[in-house]
Length: 205
Image (cartoon, rainbow, N blue to C red; front, top):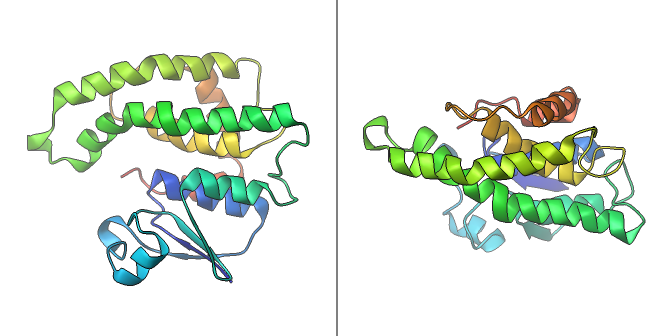
């Protein structure tokens, strides 16, 4: 029995949902977080003491942190399996860490202020500072993707999933930003995959 806890408009839950669907692994998704609550319940905190989503349960095994869940899925044989060569696997790790420690944190204030803060209480200076931090990082990803259909190698990987979920959020923020044609092309190519369409189909929020 495999169960994934989390709401689908969470960017981190989107990563896990996409990876599970891409890998063809059956699971039940339980709404949690945001308006659904649950994450502060004692039973949930026993699964994930952070009170965050997603959380994956597999026959008594419990795992939290979205990129750890991606790596767990990729360690199985299947379409998302990590490259056999250590350098290819390291490149995937590099981009997973960059997404988690650089790209997503840079845009976080802009997202929170534009989607979560009441309009009358938005900190516009925080939004602009967040955009200024994110633009150079978007430029790095855009340059890397030139001439590539995938972030690493010749097929979709968990690096694509993590970065595409973040890029989807970035490109849909209701702000002016620098055009990133390579990122836009790459994301459009991935968005046609059934697993991506399911994961990214909810409104951002």
